[in-house]
Image 1 (tube, one colour):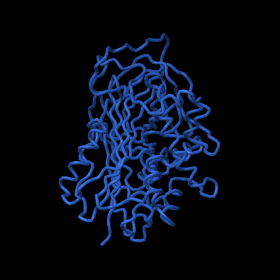
Image 2 (cartoon, one colour):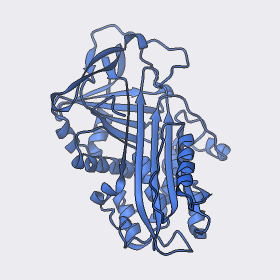
Image 3 (tube, helix red, strand yellow):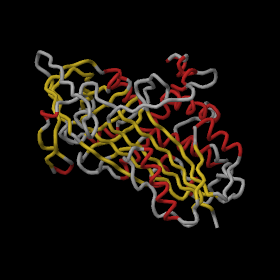
Image 4 (cartoon, helix red, strand yellow):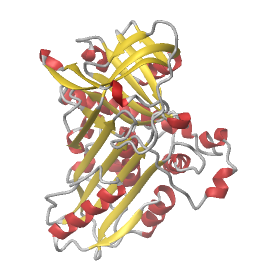
Length: 419
């Protein structure tokens, strides 16, 4: 009988201020932004590029399997979890994981990858940075399963992982315990994350990311009106459409791909949301062309422009089994009987990954959060005729850390009211 491992990934993104502190506050206060990206042995900017490349590879794999529905996922959550799991993987299993994350192991040693994730996590949690992200990795482990000392040290030092002793003899109680834990970590946004655990399950790994941010310039709620949103196959639906009549934002029109790119900053400008709107019927072409160089081209081409912006008010979520997606990216071995996770435990050699689930939630409103609790600032009016941009059909969305240029969330909105 094999002992089974379940890996759960959660990502909750809504827009309100979230803060945290670190034990390393004094240390990080002395680190300059330039030093973030390069330590003597680790180039964090390279890791961020690889994670962004992984994001687009993963997106295209999702679309190839099911091109129609909403897509929302956190590439950072998936990469951190897979990197963490690689600490305990051996042989072909380890190689597939790291190469599937877009790393070239002949150019980037494994130790540099783990240290890069460690530094990236510290950057995102750095005190004084206006973007605050709560990222946690937790290991729920049966009391009779002993983890190897080296794995525990690496999990704590590199990924700040917490090991939680759990009684797996009562799976119903175990599921309730883990679900309550994840729900609290994500402020209620991720619920019922785990269910139907196999009786052989002895360990559950959970990675969760929770980000909240406010719009730098919120929408006026009085301007939100019901409007048509044109979905796929000629269908349409009535949805609440937010409106800003005169807004000065970064803007670019990509004539090659027939799409419009608009960037909206969050308060203090340490994060932004990139919205990509293709012409009607051009989404498949845009998705096929979604590459890292195209992403950087859009970012470099943005220019300030007066726009009249129409953006849906929406709340969407999606959850899926990653064992259906990651094999397309070369990560196969870990889901088979040949999986080698012998670096995790001293008490069993038959530890296999039976399930890997990712769930993400994204909500967008006038203030940026479901309930407006602060005084609303008005949209700044600018003279002159603005460019009208209506997000009244399927569009792409990416939440970006301006501090690291890393993609925190990537997705597609085809139905703004499908949770």
